[in-house]
Image (cartoon, rainbow, N blue to C red):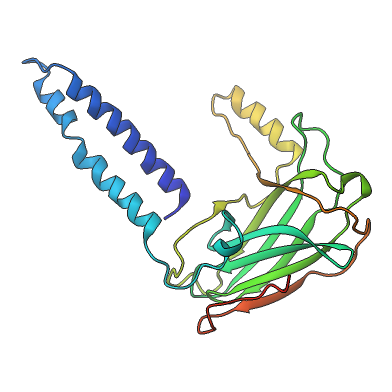
Amino acid sequence: MNQSIKSVIALLILVALIVNVVAWLSRATSDTRTVIWSLRALPLVWVPLLALLIWADFRKDKLPNFLLRYAKGYFESNGLSFTMFPTVVGQTCTWLMLFQNRYERPCQTAISFRPGVGHLGIRRAKMNEVSVEFDCEGAAFGVIRVPYSVPADYQGKKVRFEVAAVTRYPEGHGQMLRYREGTNVSKHHKWGGDVAVMAVSGLAGHLHYHKASSFAVRMPINVAEHADGPPVVEILWLPGDPDSVNLGI
């Protein structure tokens, strides 16, 4: 179930529960009896919704969810789940980008992440943006290794990165095989024009706000300030393989 839908359902449950409690604490008169008792019957609405949320969160995946073995949370792009973290190979900082297709049919994905701006929305860390495009077979789990330059000023420091991704299924999604969805990301990065759009939309009475998905990591120390090399994509698991993988780290 989509996280946005879950959030809406959770909000409906909360509102219905509050109204339900208020209704039972209110005294019904001859004029309000029908309304009060209708509101007291709201468990007929929020209890099934709560059961639906519990079922959605605890139903068993049809195939292993390898991402949960390496990350408590992860991102999502139209059925392709992914996460990333830096590691050190030799003396080079290398991003490990783990990805997993939740559907039975193959997909094509483009992921990019870049240093985010500070609280004032002005300065951005002087580090490179990472952009990768790859194909992922149905239900597959894999890793992308990306050498990354870390200037001396940022080594050992915590840096926040903004994430964007686009995923398409040329043959359709097919059957969903893993149910836990990650945090959905935008299809494009936030840009300066978004501020102008937000201002104009606010004046028009309909606020448009673009918030980039992001994560923060501490960059490694004692690594090369300059690193080159293309992203290396490797599929680590396909349906029918043994229920184990090795990242080689």
